[in-house]
Image (cartoon, rainbow, N blue to C red; front, side, top):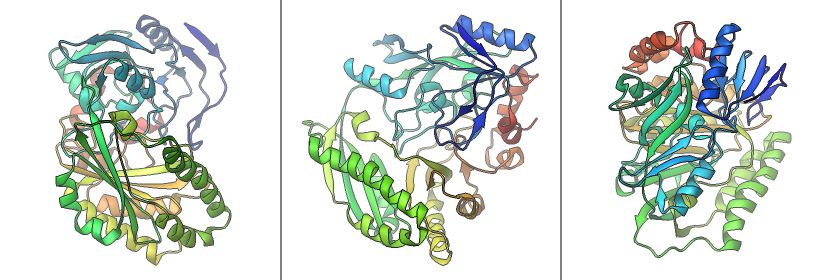
Length: 437
């Protein structure tokens, strides 16, 4: 196990969160991680594990011991009889998806980027979009974690089921995840249909678009009446991926290179944003392609931003989005990033944003370095009026009192935390705010 005392400042991907831990450790096994937790307890230090820093909150920040999972990577086991894969907690989703594809396997659903570690993504409730298939955490069959006393627990529906019910989205509050077992299935093909659509049409037909497609999402471009829609559905093939040139133009040049220039211009001269938005939103063209899941679900995201996302009852999402649009139109706000809308079925995870209810998500973004508080505060008022649940890894101002109202199983989670970590070995300022002392 490698370690360093008086370590340097840690920053998240967006640069809006920093921390200066007392020391950093990089355990090479679950046993070494357990020893690091025990040693931290002896020294009176808190412990937090950090992944790739793609959370916009201080969920992983600590002034105690920072666990880096760089050496806890790779697939432990593929069980083809059970159709599961067990993977080390620090494995990036990019590596997992590619390794599974080589084995002819795939996760059923996933988010739209692959940069996070499997533990970081699941612990904060990362999700994609789906009519019937839920978040990455909902595909978990077992979790292995080190608890506050240094014990190594395996949790599943049969083993420590009460911990399993909560630990799939544990916010790092119940222990440090060392390995995850996911359900997998034979690799399949998805046909993606991307198509521009007017705002009034996509919101007016939202229920039908949701019902008719396995995976539906759309982006609204503020200061315009334009959206871009994406429908992903299973296909018998054959595979027909985007051409190298056309794919590069859409995914790299347009969505990253040119978008970076547009955002930089908008940050320097905000008055140009509405005009740029009208032009750029019309530059998108329809395209259809067919490929294996991770090449359809995910896209490169190189333009850095800050994000807030709220989960709403699905029936409330169109009304809430229209309120956001009216807010932007009547205010002096200048918003260069699209607003993203996705869906998820209800699940049974205590702190899942889709726990117990059919859900739709509204995500708002601002370019890195651009003041975002006014916009996010105004949008948050709309979201909370609809009993919205903020994404655990994205900017929000809600606290434990609010969560106790919008999560029916919130008390179940906090009681389990009291039992597993009574001394708050895994606590930090963020968890104190969202879970209570």
